[in-house]
Image (cartoon, rainbow, N blue to C red; front, side, top):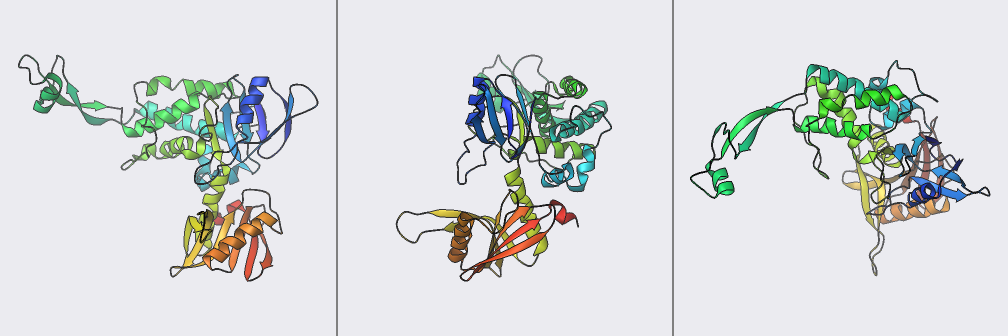
Amino acid sequence: MLRLVEYQTRTVRLSAGEAAELARLTVGTRGERERARVIERLTPTAEPGCYDLQPGPYVGRFQLLSGQVVEVAGRFPFQDLATLLGLGRGAALLDDAAAPGSGGHSLVDLIALAFVREAERLAGQGLAKEYQRRAFTRPPYPGVPSATLHLKVHAGRPDRLATSANRLTPDVTLNRLVASAHRRLSGLAYPEARLGARVRALDPAFRGIGSLPAGRPVVLGPVPARYREIEKLARLILDERSALPTGAGVSGVSVMFDMTRLWENYVGAWLRHRSPEVTVAAQQAIPLTDSGQKRTGYADFVLYRGGEAVAVYDAKYKPWRSPPSTDEIYQLFTYAQRLGVTSAALVYPAATSHRTTTTVGPVTIECWAVPIEALAR
């Protein structure tokens, strides 16, 4: 397993195929906004087959075509990562007395460990079941005749029959969510063999459970109490934060968390907690041109009071810096001018809280360093 730490450069030995595959991850994806790159830099060294490799702001684990497993650890303490992932104080769910593997458990191992513990308990109690209406067009014919189905399948032939009946089944949306998360975890490699064995041992429990429809949000009704913890973990494993960017060209199973997006979510919560009297709008579109080719920028956060913009904020998932760079001054000054506000700020993660101020004409640009645990205080 190739172990890395986000934004830290390490010299590694790679085959030509592995280097090519990782090189594809140095290009971000583009949509309305550019997505962060999984790999920031891949540079050949003077020694053949050796490369300087620097990962970007993705934390987790993925596998290359060669079978090589790449793990990127976070640069913040585990409790801070758990907070960013939305687990908050519920991160105790990830505690386990199992002996740590080489170098200790990674975030992915701890999530898998917690998932397995909850899944083993569910399997022992029995998966939830629901009645579903099923169609039958071959004997035996349970239930009651269905005229609509008879016409659709048999064109009303008098020598054929079609019926429908309720059947109790575990193949329901809630179990599909859990089973899909289990299948993703089953494709990963684990330094601790016992953990991998526990994941694979759950295969029979989820055999026969279908997959979730691709690209659709999972909407559930009331979740039974015994499913509440594993439902949170399953969503954490499967949601949009936990995959390599679209079109990355990596075929292996991955569980990768986009820390840039997670930091943006956290900053939004921090702003709402800090200024409850204002409305915080995320990813606000800002027209940058009045004539000619239309250009639009997207501010991470715009604060409104009484329907009027009062400040613009940009979340920066990078080491604290002050004063802001020239590009950052251009960006925030333009946003402030277009919005008609005089207050703008950059927000960075840091161990301790502090703030500096830069003035550009009528616009005051602040650089905030915000501890990740700030909301818990």
